[in-house]
Length: 320
Ligand code: CUA
Image 1 (cartoon, helix red, strand yellow):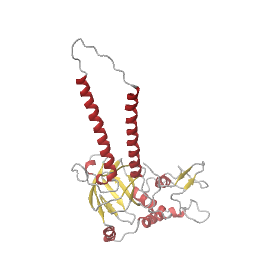
Image 2: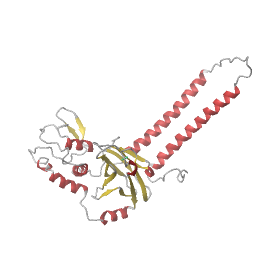
Image 3: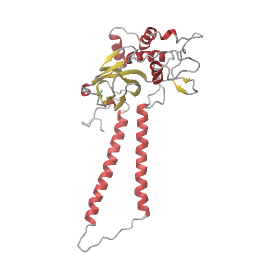
Image 4: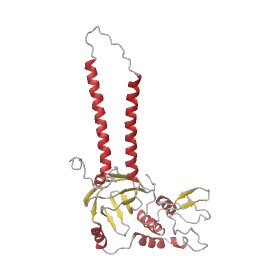
């Protein structure tokens, strides 16, 4: 019904309809009660106006039932609105298990995209139709926000950590990407295009340029260049823990605490290895802060994930 409403961007993702339904329901409920209250104020002001200078108002006693009614009904409506909104929110930030992971790196003032197949793009982002796509995003400088109005998807992109969001496109075409967080002089110029293609066209587009190594393959090269592989190997007596199958598992530390090895954990382990030292290993690893840039981090993490056969798998239950 609202699909072609001129004030609204097209709906081009599985989420768009749900967000719009929520939005219009809230708008409808708010408008209804806003008009009701305003109407009653005006009606009562006229109906109970002072008719002569001598008239003295006499207090009305509202019955108990009336108090209960106007408290309980709004409460039920508001709880319903909350539950509905929470459901859509969780859906928007919990990628389905079969979502394919792409990496987004923001910087003043551009968007960089890394495909799992190895292709890289700046400001243009080609993706296949009908495939859930999970974005793992970070920033090289300040806070940005990844916003695709046609998908009703918006998520902050922060320096120093990863945030995720996902979408599944429902129509082919080119849609705007905006930065939705003021990030400096050229914030308004920090735009891009997301190009949704039929899966076959996308495959063709991928192989159209020079043949590229996959993200995991390039990551393996970085892993060797930074000599990570001298310590992190699966042979006995290795100085660092083997990284085979590490992604998504529970890691136990010297102080007895544990965490799930997700992207943010891997990131921390590379940049600040001593922050969470895996039980049974010594603090031998130097920090790689300043030695690897965001794009190399993405490659390393992509490689480590591929060792778990999990290059495409999303850890579940991760909310921003
Ligand atoms: Cu980036 Cu505003």
